[in-house]
Amino acid sequence: MIKGSCLCGAITFSTDATPEGVSMCHCSQCRKQSGGIWSSAFVPETALTITGEVSWYAASDAAKRGSCPTCGSFLFWKAHDEDTISFALGAVDGPTGLTLEKHIFMADKGDYYDIADGLPQKD
Ligand SMILES: [Zn+2]
Ligand SMILES: [Zn+2]
Image (cartoon, rainbow, N blue to C red):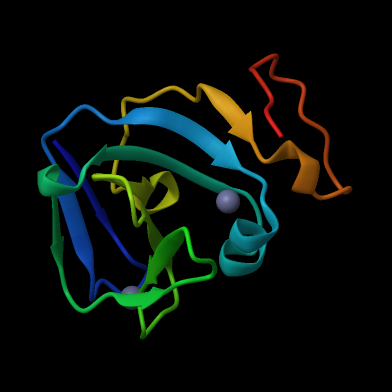
């Protein structure tokens, strides 16, 4: 069981499913919304229990982004045409038990850091 929460605690989430796609996203939208790299994994939407009022923002036609309206934590990412939902690994309470698989949207990566972990990097 993975449990997580936003910074102020108004929103919580939990799942019994085994998360997939453990990644760090370097895209400009995640950079702006999170203030840096957004680390996430996804589960079937039906397998994620969310409590509290999430503020959803559609930064593009493809997906919406969920955050806490009080503290601003960027918690969820949901593509309109997929039945999975991504949650922020940084918001998980306690160990995740997961291991990073890849870096994505490297073309948008900031110029102030380098990545040397040897994992796959995708544009
Ligand atoms: Zn909050
Ligand atoms: Zn991103």
